[in-house]
Length: 377
Image 1: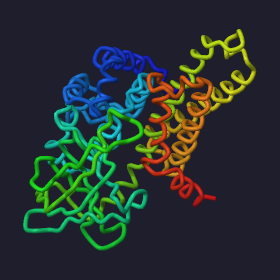
Image 2: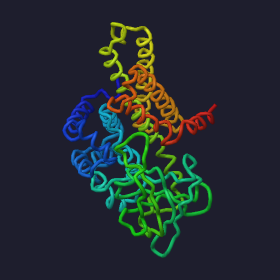
Image 3: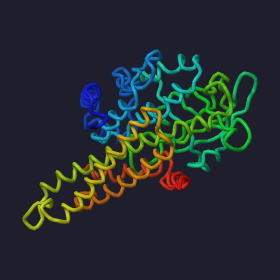
Image 4: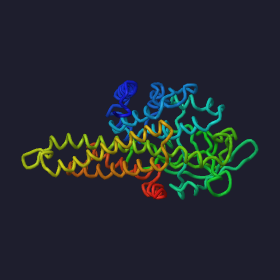
């Protein structure tokens, strides 16, 4: 039995599905893609519905649930092609840092607005010269009286144009892991500058930006957890959930691509019969279906481990590596079965082909996943 097949989760899925059908119909998703940003009004509606704080403690405005409920939202977004909404970055990746590591005062100050959609989150790790190697970051925060003064640059930051609060990985000490801290920077701070909304090959509705910190002064109270030098350890502890969420996004897209392709090959004819009647089509889709079913089983096993507090970084890396690499390869094969129509953006498979490509890169590239796994050999 699937770990997601419970009465409570089915009720949650129905609620999420009804909300997305009403507030994010296909026409709206198309418009958000053209605008390259999801409107703030949608964020607030999602917050009011409870989507943004599902696994956040109740005393801070959340629902006190667990990752299974986030996984249901990820599934429903994937079924609609709404991966471009930065829900995962806000609710599944960034918000847990506040819930897990913030001081009691910080939690009461920030979490309610994070849960209701008034404050959208981004997390700024990647820099022009530092990607998967987080120890190479150069953005620096220097103590000055009761403040930290931050200087540096970040890039490829999801929710970069929308975010009200950016959780910034910066260097507060010497080189290496022990010199890294996480500091919350409100977007209205003087010296905080949003760069351009980057022009990507996919995930059109996702605002992804360069961010600049030019002598940004923030109170010392904005240091996550109140003690410098803990940022790297905090990041490493939360990466399994981040990587599992990315795997879930990839799996949802893989399953959608398979369903779209089966439907298309049933209708499309060649040489007088449906494409699905050809053995090549059947064998291709049989392989992809097998990959999807195996991926789903492994993913849900990992969800069980995460909820039980037992998901280790290596297993999460395996999930991200195998599922996202399978996703990209399978969608490529699905597109081939569409022929020329697969190259047209009006067909969902073309957009999935573009959208999927980032999943083997962000949250740690496949090569980094292999390195982590190889250390256990």
